[in-house]
Image (tube, rainbow, N blue to C red; front, side):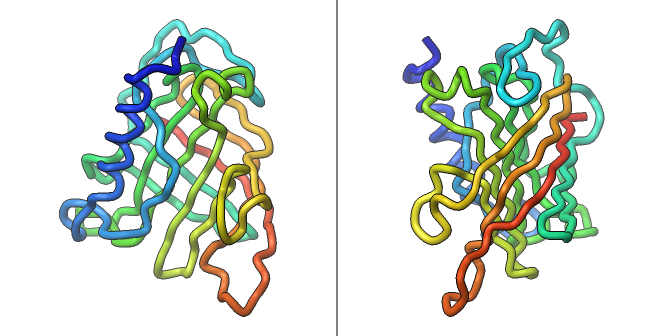
Length: 199
């Protein structure tokens, strides 16, 4: 059974690592997301929540990257060397990535983060997690979430609609809400797509 103390500890460690960044030299000071997941590996998933074995189990040796197009705008994230970055295409039968925007000077752009957690439907009960995506770019007033369990402002309006995991990469579509929407305006769900690769 995957629902054990190792899972809870791994989630806690990832939350701590992603939320404790510094400046441009050692990681982002804000803009990190609430989406966290363990980094242990198991068989990968394939197409909209069906699990399938992966003979290699290797996350690859190339660069990690993620591209998300939301409401017509594209946000690019790539490997920066920040310690909290991770990309695991086969953890617990799903996919998990946490990436940032480079600042062009060998560091991380403050206030940026993208976390992508893809959980096959048949594993949601055991893992006590659902698929969720969060994208933060403070300079663009962006705090997008696709998360059916999102609470508070924008809750109940977003979800990861479909995804396909193919080896070290994943693609899919989602419905997002922007929690940086001004408080005097209604939050309106918008459509988006995503691509992420572990190299």
